[in-house]
Amino acid sequence: MADLVTERSGVPVLVCGDEGAPIASTRDALDVIGAAFSRADVVAVPVGRLDERFFALRTGLAGEIMQKFVNYRVRLVVVGDISGHVAASTALRDLVFESNRGSQVWFVADLGELDTRLG
Image (cartoon, rainbow, N blue to C red; front, side, top):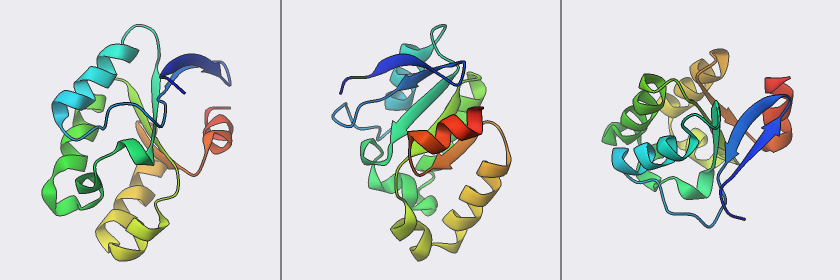
């Protein structure tokens, strides 16, 4: 599936396809934000599109990417199973917990959970 803007629970969402370019830098994040800009309020990125360094918080990549989305006022949703990453990192578990309490960055298991959160 290619990246596609669709309405989910009344909100325009750029749903990124599994086979798209990896998001491994802030430049990659800006490319995705650019694709969403003025067309979608939310970007849903499958876990497989994120570089593994995103989940190793010591690299700073997650913080840099998340900050770009916040700066451009585009919500980021990471979609998929990250249980292995969370089990290996207390810091990541805490980040996911705190992010999911807010409205700017969410981690969800699937698009159905995203729909529920948006509704």
